Image (cartoon, rainbow, N blue to C red; front, side, top):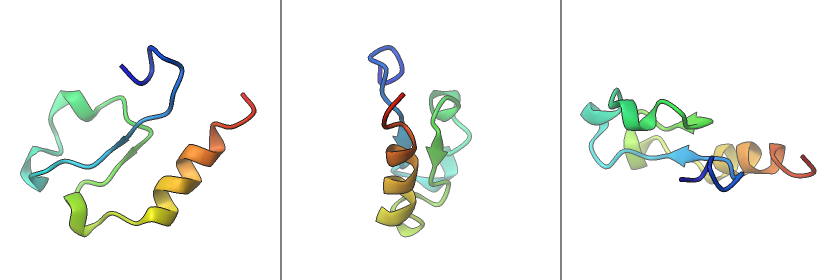
Length: 53
């Protein structure tokens, strides 16, 4: 849905074991370890890269 709307997508699986789910394949950034791996800076860097497109 994010891509259809022209937005970037950051995925944070609730359960790290599900990180290989095809639903996450299109994400520009996937935090494979879930919330424990998440960093706001990494997410902001990916989202900021989409500005001005």
